[in-house]
Length: 257
Image (cartoon, rainbow, N blue to C red; front, side):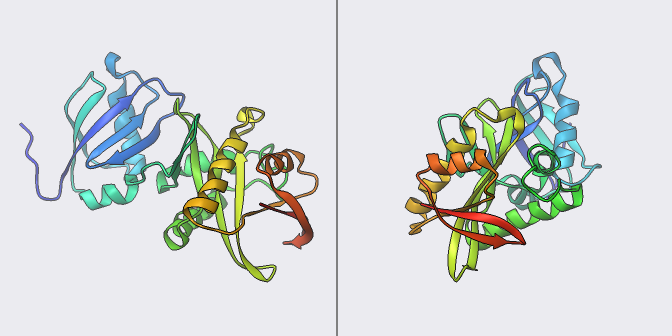
């Protein structure tokens, strides 16, 4: 017989099974949605669920008890020595934008594996000076999270509606950039998902969000001249080249809406 203490949290979890990798999909009012690389109806999901939560909560020794739904997609959990406010800080990130194929939400600390998959990929990073180390990826993740808190905009996590993580896209606030405050659209997707129009789809959503919901007068994109795929995305957004600049010692073209 379980007993809930004052410093425990009861959490309802809906498991979406058989994903290629386990991913957080949403949290609202004490209900968590997780896509797992396991089948709960075969009793495979419990260990994977506890492993995923332990990693997301930043505690390898977190005590999670499955109160009901051992072989069900709907589970009731008890998390010992945790607070609801802590869960909300980690998981309280409803989707920011949704397109025909994508769910886009702000980053949380447990997304480090997603972000590092891109930032460590030499093909995805071929127009950067070098792929990032895990520590560098972690620093960028921290910046994305803090920028969203500070400016209400940052790079965000992009998932297919079938659950696969595909890339990062978002708005970057650049104060006093070339003499004026600017908002830049940035996008970087895993090579396996290139050529499917996903970067364009995500970037269009952020263009419309910036010019509409955020009431920005214009949006820019900084692109190296040799980065033809990104130039094509900018052109599909209706952006046009404005000028060529040196940014961090490298030639870039400023594309504008």
